[in-house]
Image 1 (cartoon, helix red, strand yellow):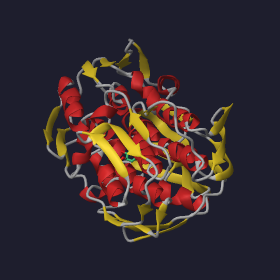
Image 2 (cartoon, rainbow, N blue to C red):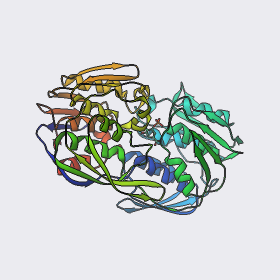
Image 3 (tube, rainbow, N blue to C red):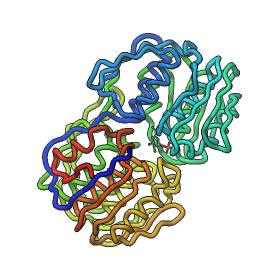
Image 4 (spheres, rainbow, N blue to C red):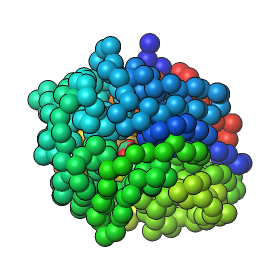
Length: 432
Ligand code: S3P
């Protein structure tokens, strides 16, 4: 049964908190660990529905994975060619990262496989990965451009130089993972900077990867198992960053958050809106930078969001639209057409939700205009999108009447425990 939440106005956010592990890094730790030689030990793994879909798929292909509790995982790698044919189609659930990256990884196997997912995943574009992989010599069949996807194994792959049409870390990563199995070097040229967790982690596993000026080059070679610690997910921290700005009782500290610069565009955008956020105690978990964030409550002003920051904040737009609705003046987002093909159409669904709360929100093909002002109460359909649900929970902190948020089960795909953590630090949020 689908759960609903009620977010009541008047909550004040305070304290020190930590958020669960990074979803992108967690998926990659299992996939690379699974095809590495030897053991990979992961700490801080995100035990969410999305990452568990990746875990189950690898188990179905013969990878031994031990869950030791509290995000500690041991992966017994089987080497690049050691995966075995799964007995059934692989269910990726709601996870776009899982289906895109597995499509690349499975191109290099000797067996064929089929990938599918939930109703949302079955609508997501897959030709963007199928096309470059076919150029490498792979056989990938989509269903009218979408899942289910079948990958025929046993093909010889060749390294290519590929210009990405959209700024997508998932497409880049799928090509790089196939490149591990290709003859010769693989090069991906990006139209804009996208998250680089795959490149960083491949290096940690001993693969030669060079990146500079929007160009990534990979040379095929074996992976050696390693120890990894997953940073807190910046995209999960984002809800508490905006909550603290809008309804902080004082500074809020969020500890051990990943601050890879390909992920932190939201900080730059919020600072342009007038936010004070300090990045303290910077350190590294392996190849990934981590810091404690200190967020000071204060008013925000509407801005024109610089297009160059869009890919660096791509998952944060739902909560950014809420910040814009609570800001003084108008915020304009352009160059963000990718939002239309995420877990939901995040432009359409956010516009519908904000309008239900009495906010002026004018969607366009690639963005939205939001006029800041008062938020009323209302009923929101999250369309099964985890980040939409959590964003409207934040909106409830500053709305005049309660907000009911429907279809919230998928919050467990990225942020199990969100409801409890939000309540602990001052949200007036409860199951409806
Ligand atoms: C992700 C890349 C992004 C992001 C998604 C996770 C990843 O997608 O929106 O939530 O782990 O590589 P795109 O690469 O499609 O932009």
